[in-house]
Image (tube, one colour):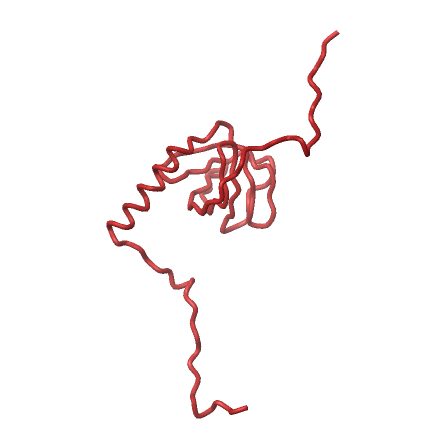
Length: 135
Protein backbone atom coordinates (compact mmCIF):
# COMPACT_ATOMS: atom_id res chain seq x y z
CA UNK A 1 0.00 0.00 0.00
CA UNK A 2 1.42 3.41 -0.94
CA UNK A 3 0.61 6.80 0.42
CA UNK A 4 0.60 9.96 -1.62
CA UNK A 5 0.74 13.47 -0.24
CA UNK A 6 -2.64 15.18 -0.58
CA UNK A 7 -2.91 17.86 -3.26
CA UNK A 8 -3.68 21.23 -1.64
CA UNK A 9 -6.76 23.12 -2.82
CA UNK A 10 -6.06 25.85 -5.42
CA UNK A 11 -6.52 28.65 -2.86
CA UNK A 12 -3.67 27.18 -0.76
CA UNK A 13 -1.16 26.91 -3.62
CA UNK A 14 1.36 29.72 -3.21
CA UNK A 15 3.02 31.11 -6.30
CA UNK A 16 6.16 33.21 -6.34
CA UNK A 17 5.61 36.91 -5.65
CA UNK A 18 5.57 38.82 -8.94
CA UNK A 19 7.40 42.12 -9.25
CA UNK A 20 5.62 44.79 -11.33
CA UNK A 21 7.87 45.89 -14.19
CA UNK A 22 7.66 47.40 -17.66
CA UNK A 23 10.23 45.57 -19.78
CA UNK A 24 10.40 45.36 -23.55
CA UNK A 25 11.14 41.87 -24.82
CA UNK A 26 10.69 39.61 -27.85
CA UNK A 27 8.44 36.56 -28.02
CA UNK A 28 9.46 33.68 -30.29
CA UNK A 29 6.67 31.27 -31.20
CA UNK A 30 7.34 27.61 -31.94
CA UNK A 31 6.99 28.28 -35.69
CA UNK A 32 9.75 30.93 -35.49
CA UNK A 33 7.49 34.00 -35.65
CA UNK A 34 8.92 36.89 -33.58
CA UNK A 35 6.62 39.34 -31.81
CA UNK A 36 7.33 42.40 -29.62
CA UNK A 37 5.91 42.18 -26.10
CA UNK A 38 5.91 44.25 -22.92
CA UNK A 39 6.40 42.35 -19.69
CA UNK A 40 4.12 43.72 -16.97
CA UNK A 41 5.19 41.54 -14.05
CA UNK A 42 7.87 38.94 -13.50
CA UNK A 43 9.16 36.44 -10.95
CA UNK A 44 11.67 33.61 -10.91
CA UNK A 45 8.92 31.20 -11.96
CA UNK A 46 6.84 33.15 -14.48
CA UNK A 47 5.81 36.38 -16.13
CA UNK A 48 2.78 38.28 -17.33
CA UNK A 49 2.95 40.24 -20.58
CA UNK A 50 1.07 42.11 -23.30
CA UNK A 51 1.64 41.49 -27.00
CA UNK A 52 1.10 43.89 -29.90
CA UNK A 53 -0.81 41.22 -31.77
CA UNK A 54 -2.89 38.32 -30.53
CA UNK A 55 -1.45 36.61 -27.47
CA UNK A 56 -0.17 33.02 -27.66
CA UNK A 57 -2.76 30.45 -26.62
CA UNK A 58 -2.85 28.37 -23.45
CA UNK A 59 -0.53 25.38 -23.58
CA UNK A 60 1.69 26.84 -26.32
CA UNK A 61 5.45 26.50 -25.73
CA UNK A 62 7.24 29.81 -26.31
CA UNK A 63 10.61 31.49 -25.81
CA UNK A 64 11.00 35.05 -24.53
CA UNK A 65 14.20 37.01 -25.16
CA UNK A 66 14.79 39.43 -22.28
CA UNK A 67 17.21 42.38 -22.16
CA UNK A 68 20.80 41.17 -22.18
CA UNK A 69 19.75 38.48 -24.68
CA UNK A 70 18.73 36.18 -21.81
CA UNK A 71 16.31 33.58 -23.22
CA UNK A 72 13.65 31.90 -21.10
CA UNK A 73 11.32 29.15 -22.26
CA UNK A 74 8.04 27.99 -20.86
CA UNK A 75 4.36 27.28 -21.31
CA UNK A 76 1.49 29.76 -21.63
CA UNK A 77 -0.80 29.22 -18.63
CA UNK A 78 -3.52 31.75 -19.50
CA UNK A 79 -4.34 34.28 -22.20
CA UNK A 80 -6.97 36.86 -23.03
CA UNK A 81 -6.93 39.30 -25.95
CA UNK A 82 -3.40 40.66 -26.08
CA UNK A 83 -2.28 39.57 -22.58
CA UNK A 84 -0.92 36.25 -21.37
CA UNK A 85 0.86 34.57 -18.48
CA UNK A 86 3.76 32.17 -18.80
CA UNK A 87 5.24 29.58 -16.43
CA UNK A 88 8.99 29.24 -16.95
CA UNK A 89 10.71 25.88 -17.40
CA UNK A 90 13.69 26.93 -15.26
CA UNK A 91 14.07 29.61 -12.56
CA UNK A 92 14.94 33.04 -13.94
CA UNK A 93 18.16 34.72 -12.80
CA UNK A 94 16.63 37.95 -11.49
CA UNK A 95 20.07 39.40 -10.64
CA UNK A 96 21.27 38.98 -14.25
CA UNK A 97 18.05 40.59 -15.51
CA UNK A 98 18.55 43.51 -13.11
CA UNK A 99 22.11 44.04 -14.33
CA UNK A 100 20.98 43.94 -17.98
CA UNK A 101 18.27 46.53 -17.29
CA UNK A 102 20.79 48.80 -15.54
CA UNK A 103 23.22 48.52 -18.47
CA UNK A 104 20.40 49.28 -20.90
CA UNK A 105 19.37 52.40 -18.93
CA UNK A 106 22.98 53.56 -18.60
CA UNK A 107 23.67 53.20 -22.33
CA UNK A 108 20.51 55.15 -23.19
CA UNK A 109 21.42 57.89 -20.70
CA UNK A 110 25.04 58.23 -21.91
CA UNK A 111 24.27 58.04 -25.64
CA UNK A 112 21.32 60.42 -25.49
CA UNK A 113 19.48 58.28 -28.02
CA UNK A 114 16.05 58.67 -26.44
CA UNK A 115 13.41 59.12 -29.06
CA UNK A 116 9.76 60.05 -28.86
CA UNK A 117 7.53 58.13 -31.18
CA UNK A 118 4.88 60.18 -32.95
CA UNK A 119 2.13 57.67 -32.28
CA UNK A 120 2.27 58.61 -28.60
CA UNK A 121 1.98 62.35 -29.07
CA UNK A 122 -1.23 64.17 -28.35
CA UNK A 123 -2.27 66.63 -31.03
CA UNK A 124 -4.55 69.49 -30.05
CA UNK A 125 -6.36 71.00 -33.00
CA UNK A 126 -6.04 74.76 -33.33
CA UNK A 127 -9.28 76.67 -33.69
CA UNK A 128 -9.90 80.01 -35.32
CA UNK A 129 -10.58 82.57 -32.52
CA UNK A 130 -13.07 84.47 -34.73
CA UNK A 131 -15.26 81.35 -34.94
CA UNK A 132 -15.42 80.75 -31.17
CA UNK A 133 -18.84 81.49 -29.75
CA UNK A 134 -19.13 83.06 -26.31
CA UNK A 135 -21.50 81.35 -23.93
